Image (cartoon, rainbow over all chains, first blue to last red; front, side):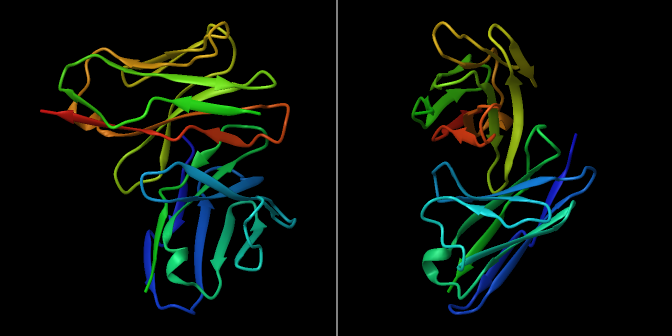
Amino acid sequence: GAVVSQHPSWVICKSGTSVKIECRSLDFQATTMFWYRQFPKQSLMLMATSNEGSKATYEQGVEKDKFLINHASLTLSTLTVTSAHPEDSSFYICSAREGRGTQYFGPGTRLTVL
Amino acid sequence: GNSVTQMEGPVTLSEEAFLTINCTYTATGYPSLFWYVQYPGEGLQLLLKATKADDKGSNKGFEATYRKETTSFHLEKGSVQVSDSAVYFCALILMNRDDKIIFGKGTRLHILP
């Protein structure tokens, strides 16, 4: 099946720094990528949807200046958490799909902000 | 609005027991239904799906049938294993809208040896 990778799988950073998370589709062209956030023992919360070559569409309540999303190619999307603070600590999961096909999820990135 | 409701966990069973995780949905359109599984420390994996009424999705011994009349998509497995311990998410997509996945809150499953 289709494979989506994320890098890094975990990251620890100091408060005030920025962190970039990559999401790649390895064997298909991801025309659309999604970024989710998951709090402990809770469901996934959609943060934003990005289509290749265009600006991301953010869900209500998600700060676009805080969570910068770039989808510059058909196989790569990045999420940058700017000026991270402890409350940004979470599990971030991306998913990708080709056209209207099935969404395939990445393994997630655990961010811990000290 | 559109939503997914699934039974709260955690669900604890002994190995080889029969599993049912209930899932019901509310949708203004005609959704496709999914079960995803999340193993500890990992992302979500698609377990099975069904795209129209009376379809049965199956994978790894798990089954779920799309029941339009009861708006349900219950997950079942006849004999669970310790390796099935994970969190299971029921979800829907309305393909005629913006294709966003709507997830249930997840059900944590513990299988005891």
